Image (cartoon, rainbow, N blue to C red; front, side, top):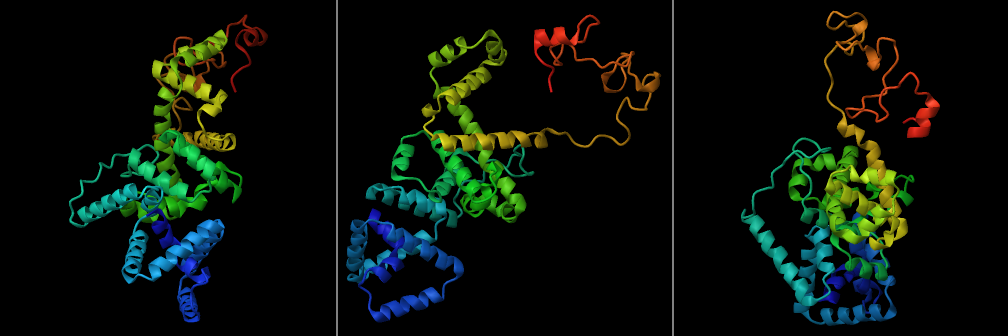
Length: 396
């Protein structure tokens, strides 16, 4: 069954270079190729290259399979129907079938896909998931579910180059690790083919990811996904659920005793930076630091992992885009040229004016009681040198 599936992708190529075709056959093949679109010819070329990259033993196996199918009209018709069936599937489902090397498992996947297709045609599918507004996404666009994300990442994996050893290693990883590796490899590949920027990876895989998106998203936002805005939307659709998936992974990725050892090895100042966090956040941050110092635990190669970190830094730089409020009321800001409570120069009831300056015109460094700078207000005898010695250099 495995060879049978692969045969459908290499049919024309095997036929042309197997040495078994007659002159008329080759002319017919030439006419078919001439009538193809540029995209179809490009696909055929990639399949021919894939055939040439096989070992001689594998190529000979395809030749024998070709002879067997061509000599049996019933089997030949079945092969063509199977090829048509595969062509009707989205990329992620084709990849799902391809990854099943066991014939029984592959047949089960095909039957499941056929059943789901018949149910859709009869209108028996479940109702669409609720379209709750997701942060950073347009009104009415929800995020991806775990299974939808897996479909997208499986499709993306089929477009990337991994060695056989890497594929075996990836198969042994948990889903969050596997997804992180796939995205990291896409980032590296995309950056190498354009500007060296982690945000440029989507340029190369926009069409692939769009095709793998759920039907509801394509139906509602299909046009937007294919223009320049779509690149950012697709990146957010993929990256946000990956972040949530990774947060959940961090909760169990590192044993408690290892986290305790890591915390004990820190200085008191470093420990306070973690202990002051809520328990769940502290655990995730400790696990993140542990994995950063022990990247081999993640299972993702060092270069790929660094690409993923670059994308994380890229998104942190964009975070302010989603934290800004809406436009304020017309007119100058409060405290600027607008007296309040009868006080001149825009001073408020506490006597402070614009930018929090006090009656003497100096600006406060914050309040020890609230969420301001922990240094507190400057004292008259608190020289800059003393403050820097006690608390370090001023914040940027």
